[in-house]
Image (cartoon, one colour):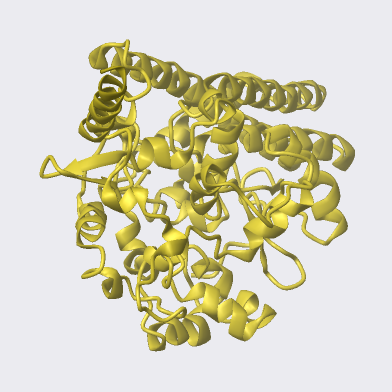
Amino acid sequence: MAKNFRWAYLLLAAVMLIITGCSGSEEEATSASELKTGLSKDEISNEAFKDLFPLQYDSYLQNEKMEDTKYSGSVKRSKFDHDKEPYLPVLFNGYGFATEYNEDRGHIYANEDIRAIARITDKSVGSCLTCKSTAVPHMIEEMGDDYWSGNFNQDIWPKAEAMGHSPIGCSDCHDPQTMDLRVTRPSFIKAMESQGIDMSNPTKNDMRNYVCGQCHVEYYFAADNSEVTYPWANGFKPEDMYEYYETTAKEQGFEKDWVHNISGTPMLKSQHPDFETHIEGPHGEAGVTCADCHMPYDRVDGKKKISSHWWTSPLKTMDQSCATCHSNRDIDELKDRVMGIQETHMEALHKAEDISITSHYYVNKMITSGVSEEKIKQAQEHIRKGQWFWDIVAAESSAGFHNPQGAMDSLRVSIEESNAAINIAIEELTRKGVNLEELKTEIEKVKKAVYDEKDNFKKKDKAINSYFPAQQPAPKK
């Protein structure tokens, strides 16, 4: 009797696991290493996976959606628009990001958008394609260092087209033959190993971060060959990366991304450090992965359980992305908590942004007023650091949520550094007899001119004028 009861209990437990989904679906329960797709190991076309994994492929196609949350989205519009960030043409003046800088669209548009963006010119190099095309891993393998520095328009793009590439997709993260998760961008492996992190046998949970982290990162182009390089040797925090740029990168010949057209400062441009911010944030510290929130398990037609391949904000999938862990919290309460963090973050971000803008104009006036080069350089060093700590937060995709405390700490540093530049300028300009009230008025006037300009491609031109002349030759159009 007891034996029969025990078996009945075990059977009931097994049924309950299947019903609740804790045991995973048929495809989740099957080890990827046991799967054989029949595809070539060199397959790079997303469509080749369509019939083998129709549910995942259909969910991938949802990336075509053009939707917004309040602080992120995939609507094709300029970030210079009045309701977004109209002053970025000031902060990035003299750099391609001041010409055109748009909302992030879904991964499915990667190849289309890189061909359309005005920042790609006849001088652009292969590295610009690195996180856009499924052809890139094979191009790196075939071309070696010639890939990084190859001419984008003349050599790299035509080669990718001839290879039949797709935008970011299946083969970027999966072995086509086994569907095992994999890292396909060597820059990520090099950067992790620079920290002493063993990449030879990562766990499955590690890989659920790594496949995203190979592209959603801060990077620069190496001075000698334009290779995509991540500044991680000292750590993932903004101060660790800044120290790297001031030491290792400079020793290797990389000093700057561009010279600012208003203040003449050698600047650093942050990219999209989502991986670093997440890893240092509360969810990352707790072992929650990128995929847990951005690729939650979903039931198709109420039956099949798959990992969603609609890479979007968890605010759109909160029942799957949030409630599975926060089961004791009301969904609306959780959403209010997220939005509250983002509201506070954006308020601080715009405060730091405004002070950074002001610091550029103060240093411009130092230059035109004949202040010593030593003092100008001191102020420029503060500007460089101040804008870096602003941009490392601004360029990240979560509006502060990935690491709320870390983001606020970075913005605090940004404000302190930008104010340090302004204070140096005030002292030196006072000695020169400059009318500081007039200077403040002129700063507000030039900001208004940028804001009021309706043509987003001309906003950058309004950031300079006869009172604030350009501090480097105008870029060729």
